[in-house]
Structure formats: structure tokens, C-alpha cells
Length: 637
Image (cartoon, rainbow, N blue to C red):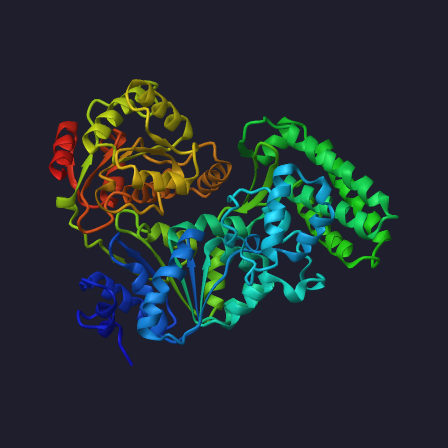
């Protein structure tokens, strides 16, 4: 049997399938550490600097082990890339017979029941949605997988998608008349039979927390679970280990109830009448908040806006609807299923009326049309560590950004994995020669109004020097829009700005239009890979501390202080360091790349905690002189 070292050897299997292959010792060492964790059923946390080759480093021991494996990625795009590009390459070199499956969340699969249900309501659909529905209907007669991604003519935000896919709340499960033909169940069945399953973190934790039929059965049977982009897990797990209910969820279930009643219980108009009154009250709740999207403390909102009378009205109305549904119990199994869903949602809603439970945060967020109410645990450590300990599998957590100042302590505490093995692999890139870090002189403090004009001046100078091959990254949408506006007014009309087009089209335009800088915020700080001369400069406007208005962060800070801790040192700084490392990681993506990272925040040098940030970044050349930055960029030319 081939060993890990033999596979990565300069004359090994990998060299035969990759042209110009060179051994990277950090990759081999990481792969062996993962192999050891698999052999001893251990838990491993591994930071692998950019360029280590962590994907192959975990795929090789996973496939060589011949065990049942789940690999979870940070996003759906990474999931597709891993399954269609990286996995086949390694699988063909090791064992073509090992069966792999790609499993997505339920909202990616056509729901035959909802296709028919909304087909019966065809006349009520808007014109645009009607056209989309016709496309889906035609495609539904030819698809074998039911994966909506096959319909390339539909945009990601097509209005028809929620109408023809299911949610946990409106899925009828085994009682559905289309259960035998359900594409989601078929995909899950295939995954359960596969040797290796590729999922994403949202799906993994949604199914883990909700104990749905998928992972409720799947996780105990696997031997190895690998989390790529593992730095994302604490926030994603918190979301799914908590509870949430949205006005949209309630509205969708009430709307589906009315549709089903008109189809199958035409003599039960009271279901529709009580449901419509409930929908109106839920809409009234959203109207109590400003039209602009916002997040806030739910307990404070109840008190300040005197919401309790309205909440009690909604709760009473939901109970009345459940009573009406009870009268018609057993007449229609679909109606019965909706009644079960509504009962669970009513219980969650009732829990959100009592905001005194310890160790959780009650918070809300609004969109233009809806409101989402959350109950989120302040820490996942206890619950997650129990899951890991109860499992007989090996667990591997890997990312380029897990340490803070060379320590895993923050991540281990977040995850409850203090006993895990840890390994840090530095990037093989020659940062002192490939990259330069600049904190420009004479900057005002980040909170001062004059910072915008300085950012405009610096941005324009960097755009000139890099010939437009620059990412100008911001911590707020407001500052991004303001600086982009002034840059356009003063010189550059042709710039790319997040929000003016989709993320994928912006990235494609940046790569193809070689002299067009990109102005962006959070979603472009990670998961973006631009190699070579297409990107020579990354500017970051300031240290990415999370917004102090974030209600979940506020609750965690308050809890930390109540326990005698230093919230700034133990929560806010580590979180910001990892975010900064992600943003900085956009710059050097290959051994031949060169470029400059410019951070426009004096606090890196004037505050003691600045040393933690600088110490967590790669060892680049350092300067405060923009002239040297310009010279460095000109040398690249």
C-alpha cells in the first residue's frame, strides 16, 4: 500500500499527474499529521499558511485510509470546486473505485410537492415569477438530480426558487406524497452509501442541530470528519445551535396552508381566514421597526417599543389557528404536517417572549420586508466538545487563519477543544522578498471624519502605481461607497464596486479587465483567489473590529465581563486578528506573486495590541513611506 510520503515523493503518484510538481515539505508534514490523527482517532487543529497545499494534504490520507469520510467546506463554491476539481485528481491517483458524493442543503433541490402546490396557484404568480416557473417546470421533466444549479438561465436570487424548494418548516417528510421521488432524499441516500461525502459547514451544522434524517444517521457512521476553512465554524455553529424564527418562515407556512386548504379542504375557509389575520399581525410586527435593515437587542426592543401586547396577540392568534386545524385533523395529511410545523414555530415564538434565559443572547435582525428573531448560545464550546468526545471518529480542523500571535488558545477555547493536537505550518512563500507591508504616515485616527479624504488620496496613488490591479477593502459599506464616489469624481470612472453587480461577475470583471480596481467589503476578505499579476495591491481601510452595535457581540462582551474576563483581549482582538489575516491573505497566492499590503490604521503602531496584529501577519518588508510602496510596485513592472 502506498504511504503518504511515497505519494508526495518527487517521483510519486502526485508527480505523475501534476506537471512541474515540486515537493513541499510543509504539505507532506501536514498530511502525515492528519494521517496520524486518523490512525489514532484523534482530534487535530492545523493552521496551514497560504500555499501549503492543505486540500491535497487532507485528501491524500483521507483516501489512503479507505475509511468513511465527511469533508466540510466553508462555502458552497468551495464545495463544488473540491468535488469537481481537486477530489477527482487525487481519487484517480489513489483509488478510482472509492465512491464520492456531493450533498447540498435542501434549498438547492427541486421539491416536487411544492412544484405542484404552486402550480395549482399558477394564476396568482407575478409575470416574472411565471416565466421562471415555466423554465423550472420544463426542466423538471428532464432532470435526474433535481439540483437547481443545473438551470443556468436562472439567477441565484430568482423569486421562483423558494416556491419550488423546501425548508425545514414546510417539508412534509415521510408523509409527503412525493417522498419516494424526492430529490433531496435521493441525494442523501447516495451520500450515506458513499465512501466520501463533500458538504459545507451550514449543511453540516443545520443537520447536526436539527437531527434530520441525513446527518442524524450519517455522523455516527463516519470515521473521519475534515473541516476546511475551519475558522468559520464558531459563528456558523452558534447560529444552528440556537433557535430562530422569521416573519418570512411564518408567512410562508401560513401561505402554504391557505393554498393547501383551497386545494383539498374547500369547506374549511376558517383556516384561511384565521391564517390571513395572523399574517397581518406578523406584518404589523415588522412595521414596528425602521425600514432600513438593522440588528439589535430583542429584550431592549420589546421594552422600548412596548411590543408585548402585539406579541401576545400574535401568540393567541397562532394558538387559535392551531385549534382550528385540530378540528380538521386527519382530513388531509399535508394540512396535518403544516399543523405540526406551526406548533413547533409557535413554541419557539413563545420562548422569544421570555428573554431571561441565562447564557444565551436574544437578538433581532430586519430586512426590508421581514424580521428574524434569534436565541443564540453565547458559547458552543461545551456542546460541541461533547459531540466530538461522544463520536468515535477522527476530527480535523484546518484553515490558513486559526492562530493569534502563533497561539491556538483562542480557537481551542471557542470550540471546547483544549485537548486537541495542534500543528502550525508556515507558508512556503518568501514573504520578505515577495511582499511589503505599509502603514502610511500622517493618518488621522480611524474615527475622524478626515480619514475618508486620506483614503481617497492613498487609493488613487496605489491604483496609479499598480495600474488598477488593486483590491481596496473596507470594514463598512458606508466608507466603501464614500471613497468609491470620490475616486470616481476625481479621476477613475471605471472602477468595480461591491453591490453594483453580483460577487461572481465582479470577480470575473476584475480578472478580465486588468486595469480596473475593485472596491469591496466583508465578502471579498476571504475565499477569493487571484493569482499572478492580476492583483498587486491590497489596501485595508482599518483594523476589522466587529461592530460594537452587534447584539451577539454585546452579549458575549457583557457575559465575559460578568465572569471577570477582559472582553477586548479575549474576544474582540482575536476575532479582528483572524479577519485581518483573511484580508491580507488575498495578496500572495503563488510562489511567483509579488505585491503590497497597505493598512491605513495608526493603531497598528500606536497601541500595544497592534503588536498582536503585526505578529500574526507574514514577515513582509515594512515601511511607512508610500514612495517606497510605489517604487516596489514599479519594480514588479
